[in-house]
Image 1 (cartoon, rainbow, N blue to C red):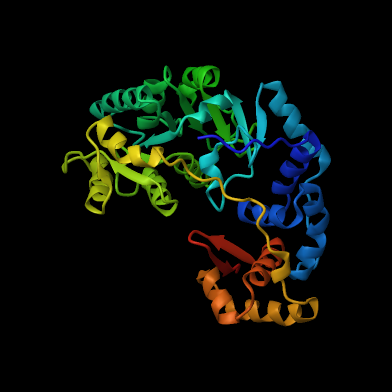
Image 2: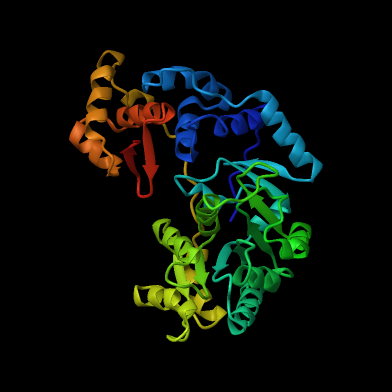
Amino acid sequence: MQNTVQSISESERFDRLRLIRSENVGPVTYRQLMSRYRTAGEALAALPELAAKGGLKRKIKIASKADISQEFDAADKIGAKWLSTGETNYPMALTTLNDSPPMLCLKGHASVFQKPSIAIVGARNASANARSFTRELAGDLGGAGLLVASGLARGIDTAAHAGSLATGTVAVVAGGVDVVFPPENRELQEQIGEVGAIISEMPIGTVPKGRHFPRRNRIISGISYGVVVVEAALRSGSLITARMAGEQGREVFAVPGSPKDPRCKGTNNLIRNGAQLTESANDVLEVLKPMLSQPMREPDLFDYQHNQVIENSEMDNARTLISELLGPSPVEIDELIRQSKLTPTSVLTILLELELAGRIERHAGQKVSQRL
């Protein structure tokens, strides 16, 4: 699984990080901006006008060159580097996501992403048997040629990384790649950085907070062909990763457990709802085998159709119409296109302007809502 070779200049890399760090620019908006303007420098120059058209009454805040220089300097000091979507070493599986991280900070070896990945996640307070099983499973999957991805948390994540250190593992962290969390995993994190890879979309030095973990989870599932959940209570964060995997078109695997153990209720429920029952690495490999023979296709990141935008004289009416159709409940973008009878690119342009103005929020499933 390897990306189409694409090299970018250091100035373009700098501008891309500056773009994603600017106000109201999320991963989806970033992708649309890059599709429209081709270079991050052109997109940065266009932000003030686009935000104004979306209704922002003040000047949009663009990340300063000084702040971005500090981010690059901080990465250099710890031997990390920034990878951009579409570059040779950027994990190709992530580029298939609509909200793929535009920039990834990597500490370690980008070469590990030449292997297809499988994620293993589960309870932080995992049982001894589950931890032992996870180490064995991770070792077997790694021995079969898969890169094992997890989130470097306590319990199952720790066991998954430890079991695959010798074959290849990647830790997706919620904070900066230099921040050790949890503290007891300091030695393991250092080992992963030496033989595998640690990745994050967050700035160096970021201490992980609760809101960062769902964003991290989408990367864990998005980087992989499938997600194996070993133990998870009904309200476990691992189930968020499993749900995201399903939304991303990835396979979901679950290890069955005792109905008397609350840590197994989430995994048993996943199986009840269609997840692949998993008792060994062979259960995973049999499902993935046909998928691995047809690697994920890297999409065209620059597919914006300029000729589909309606005339500027009609855009004011179109903006009013889309604003009227939006509400506090998420609605599919396709439904906005259908009801407005506008061209898809016109609707996407208006949504882009509204997001930059801070007037809408994006949701899973290609949905948007009015920001209250």
